[in-house]
Image (cartoon, rainbow, N blue to C red; front, side):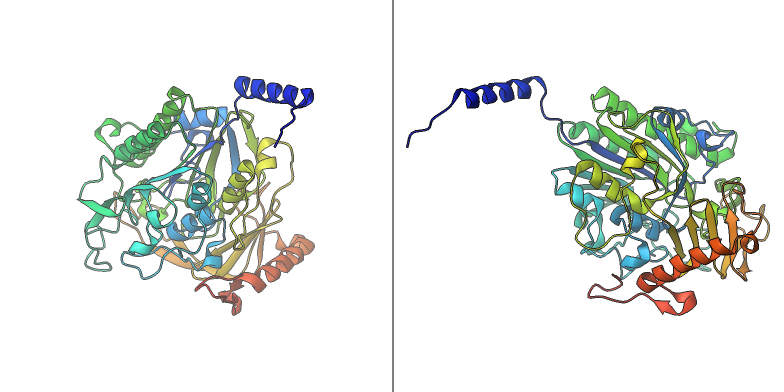
Length: 474
């Protein structure tokens, strides 16, 4: 067989070869998510902290984009983490509350995690920190798309040193894992943040020549608070502030490693938290001020979180976005950046990439739905509005009752009728304006009724329709 090469074909080949040599194809961006535990909205300088120094996070915001209305998907550990990694409202996939040690359930292996999505694209994947999505072998990180794991399987207070051990709880030792093996039992967590940081830095160096996904879910500042000697007594907010300063240092170490390795421009780095401060722990809890309430509630202080994203190659530095977004949107946003297909099963998140880039000012979602407990729809965020349905929530009897690692006592209050707040003018949710805006109330109620058809609402006697996957609804 004779092959005829024309002058045009030869010219095209030479041009393509020259282009490839001069401008090699850019590899996909690295992805890093730093996810803290129980950190309040106001626990970062750029978000209002005046008594905690967070220079690295503040600089990250100056070099990247700050979101001032970003929400965790639920105000509790396991549910929030499930949403981040799957792009689903946690009640869609049957994840509720916080799993206890030796739980029989976990994140179903049939769900597609962000780690699995990226691993399919050739990414190296690592998690260094707290998992809390089931500690049975079939639910652990290496079964959910991660190549490497170092950390703890659930919250750092689920151990024999819990202040209510023997009265309410009976926890066994807190295991420290490397991959699938327990390598130690923790009795002192003082150096855990430093070790997580060092292993994260090593992971970046090891994978500098391939795209990687690094997930750093810090166990801190969840109680019990622990900090290394380097940061003891360094902040004006006591031990809690010291812990935040060490987390800020950790972010700085990661960002500096990227710079040294020549990876800074082509790496997307995200910083946020799983839910608001655990107010019952008083001076060992964070601050959500001026937001209302904290962890375990759908009020703004329970789910609105600090959020910073830096990606020099694509995002304009110093931008502030007020448009509401939620953790469920992170997975589809990353998929959009990489131009890859979303998971085969239905998810709830939508890409916010155009909004982050500034090429659009349109919110990716019309509304966000705030579920809690097993499957109770407590609130809806729609534009500048936040509507609450009748429900029961916890609040502190005395804000000063919890102290030095010992919890105070919650009491419970009822939202007895629909309440509506204008968050643009009333960020602290002090003035119920439902009576003044009946049309807004009616519109949000309609959206909520439509969501209940899919995800249900235990308060209204409407559970989501089950499918072949236990706990999942379509």
